[in-house]
Image (cartoon, rainbow, N blue to C red; front, side):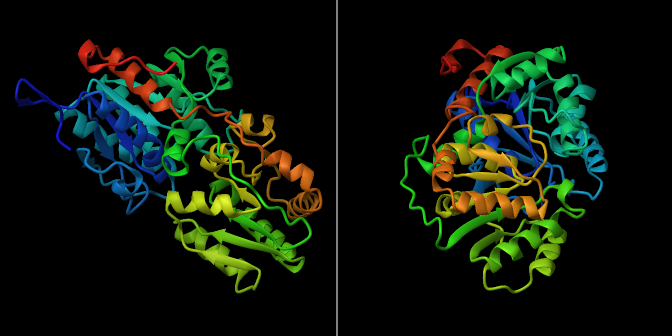
Amino acid sequence: MEGPKLGGKLRQSRIALVVGTRPEAIKLSPVAKALADLGEPPRLFVTGQHPGLELAQHGMAGFAATPLCCPGQPDPLLHADLVRAALRRVLALSAPDLLVVQGDTSSALGGALAARDAGIRLAHVEAGLRSHDLRQPWPEEENRVAIDRLSDLLFVPTECNAINLAKEQARGEIFVTGNTGIDALAVFAGPLPARHRRRWLPRGKFRLLVTCHRRENWEGGLDHLAAALISLGEQGVISDVVLPPNPTVTATMCRLMGKRPTIRLLAPMSHPAIIQAMRKADLVLSDSGGMQEEAPALGVPLLVLREKTERPEGVACGSMELVGTDPSRIVATINRLRHEPAALRRMSQPAMPFGDGLAAPRIAARCLEFIGAPAATRQTAPA
């Protein structure tokens, strides 16, 4: 997609987005579309943190994209430095009025540091999330804190996130918008919260959907998860395990679980496919942040394979529980829910703790107002 035209001439995009991972593409695609709908299609800086990232697959086809050629590194801090250096060179040639980063990745951190180096104003989508433990997750928690300190605009999903930033005396302007991941979910899932019927078989076959990819679970966590799934399989629980794109993690999970009749190892799925798989499962086990946001809106019970979460709203609304990766704890929790259908139904009540699916137009309108876009290109954001 070309930049917007003014007086018959092509003019440079005034807003640019940094995209390096699949979650970033998913969560920034509604923002890109909302900006385009207001006459300001953004430019994309694509870092390459996730190799083979297909923007078209995540709703970002047609936007002007500049590849930075910074593939992911074993050391995430090194990757942030690579993104910073590559983006700084590009920004020296063509600088937007506002650079937008999302979340807590090394691509987002590199983008934020490059914006500071170049004197470009910075917006952070999904700001203010905190586990309040720099080790869980590392380096994501540290990245997000650093990005928030550098940002001029802080778009937070919830009031809890805004409180976190207020306590830290963030210098940027704070706006509660909801999470753009819910905007993206609505594209594939329809009107939210979802209102689909569930059929419970508490003493029959019980199907799990399992994903696990976070760095904090690489050392020992995968072994513990595999042991729990093997034990559950012996008790008649069927597990569909979606393997992550990370080849090291995938190889480890394949080795640990091997060929077992109750465990099906699945290739990485597209975003629409994983949503459909969530809807078909009786219970989801995951360490994914995106799934923590999506599961409540879909009415899908979720056990979080972490000891701490930066999304406590999902726990507070009753849609999810923290179980970590201790095998005995996982097995005990799942068996309790298998034999207590009332408890499982309570976890399955649709809820919207992370927004109403209209975060992106709010973000887009505020970004344009912030850079002083002409009133004719703006519209009132949803309340």
